[in-house]
Image (tube, rainbow, N blue to C red; front, side, top):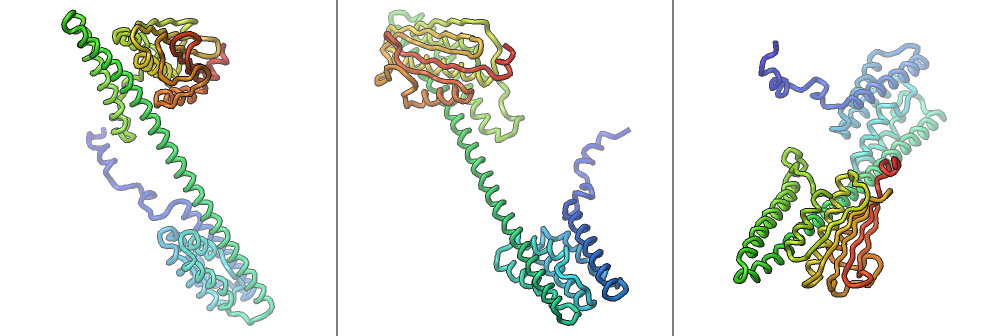
Length: 398
């Protein structure tokens, strides 16, 4: 039976043998493959030129291939070792080999991680290696030297192309990371604006109402102050949740698990609007359906921002109406008031405002492929209409 200390021992014990090695499995495959190719080439060449295969030469070829195991940690030293072993083979036996597999891999590794000041001498050393062969100079030697030079240039070109491709990949990854950070900043800014604008505006209006009724109707003032206290507590709670997400830094254990507000919370903000002094009606049309969490949050924030603007700019005596319509292929939320409207607002048409609230609503709706219309109503007041298409999979079932 395992003891209670078995798991910690396994967790803090020595690493597996494969993980403790200074090279990867791919490095080992490359080294073994290069050694095998060099051994085959050396064996055939020695058998053809000498009639036998030197055992010492085979050993040098094997060591040259296995030296590639260190090519990632020390590419220059690895190349120097492979070059020295290759030079030893060429000086000891009249082999017909030129640039072998181990030399190609070692040179490619140098080109990939070192600058021209390092890889140019390595290229020259690799290109003139056949000159050290124990063979009489002939026309075949010249062809071997030309072929060796062409192979070296091909290896260098491949390494430089891979370096350029890697730089482009890194730059693209950096741009994606910057875009993700910018998107997250905009999302946080939208959330913070919605929380602060809605609650602070409502609290300001309720504080003014409480002050006006403090002497003539203390009971109404007391109720307003109690509601004001609750709004302040709610605002602090929502801001704390948002800040907890920022502090969590990717650790889901510290992030808040409280659900985001949605359609079920529309009654609450409509009631808050009424308590703040703007009578507000809430009307639901069509058969209610379960919408995705992100779409519900968008509906909530659109209504919240529209009612906040109505209270700020509608003037005294204004009324508001919130209408949520479940159509066949879309969900429509419409918020209108009969107040004076924001100064400078457009008469009709698409969104024309430049405030952070309108920008935030537009971005939220656009994320779900919808459209947002804001402007003055045909009569008196202001209107905000957001159309959110159903997700494809849900719309296909209808």
